[in-house]
Image 1 (cartoon, rainbow, N blue to C red):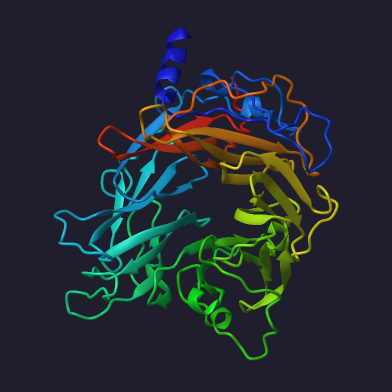
Image 2 (image 1 turned 180 degrees about the vertical axis):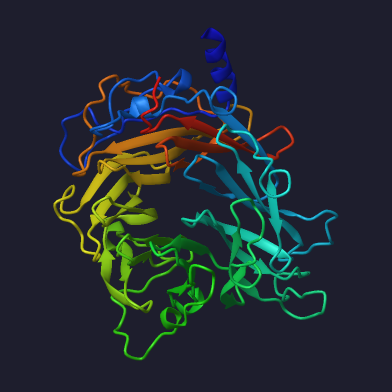
Length: 498
């Protein structure tokens, strides 16, 4: 046992995982709860207490599953790409999708787009590279030559869908000059979905030889992907024109096999005015509900408010029926500047918005609950919103609702670099809410300050597999400044506890 614990400590070195129980033990006035923290030591389990869940306490959920990787931790060298998109299969196999610059590199200038190699790697359920996937564990494909991965989703039959922003490789010697292809023509952004079989081959039965076109654009834009219950993929992108202060988001839907859904994609003159319109540039929030409705959300980008209460908050829209028209929704104000946000489905068929909101240095994790028709559920929290006070340097990474309606937020705090260094340092943060929006109040072993040291590993997100296990993911640079992905698998809500 001692050797196992030593391996956990060695593997966790640099991961920096601990949790902060954000004020759950205090009897406090609602909306004014300050931070308390709870140290998680070896295997993430040194802190007792619960999560407010009727099934599994957070301290139990964070116990490391030592059957995964090396004593519960798997690592994968990403090299030097931008951070990859991630997905998890029901059996616990992790999908890592990204792109890397092709070698040898072409001459580059400001704004040039070099040829890339796009990949999807699959980690097996034991934390090792799945060598039976693609070519020795890695699937590779190309759309236009330069690709940026935005999202990874799974269809029920095991097909893997990858949202890809693609462009022809091009060269631009200056900021003022268009990026021109080898033929001397300006390239175009293609927002696409690539289909892979469960074994990592390009699925020729999806779209046109594995590739489905979604949008064409002259500008780079964020892209999000969701799968509806009937297995139809839905793409969301921004159509902002910030210089003109024009904001908006656009949806496209494909058939389950990647054929454009003309009825959904074609706007009609009979569509009613949208309840609200906002930007999709900074964050693309897209959710497919089990009743077939689609939820999108956005804010007004690039604006500063002298009074944070003037921030209109989030434009939440419900799209239902045969077209992409908004059928209901509207603006939800959080009473402060809206800094970042995420959507999560709720077991009752509705959805939840988790956001980081700030008024100066007074910042909160703000959680709002909505019914499926986009109406704020005023029985949740305080008139529909629960607010948990957190430090201004907190960043929200993941948010999810469990089957018992309890909620978990996973975030990070960035701290000052160690003396004499410039390296970034992080701590991971967990926050629990009960189903009615109250902070979980049965965590009793709480310290009043953070006691474990920060590390260079940046928390990224939490993924859950079909067995209820949690993959807690971080990344950090190695000595050569290459990015390394770290995955700790915890027991989560799994019943297979030992």
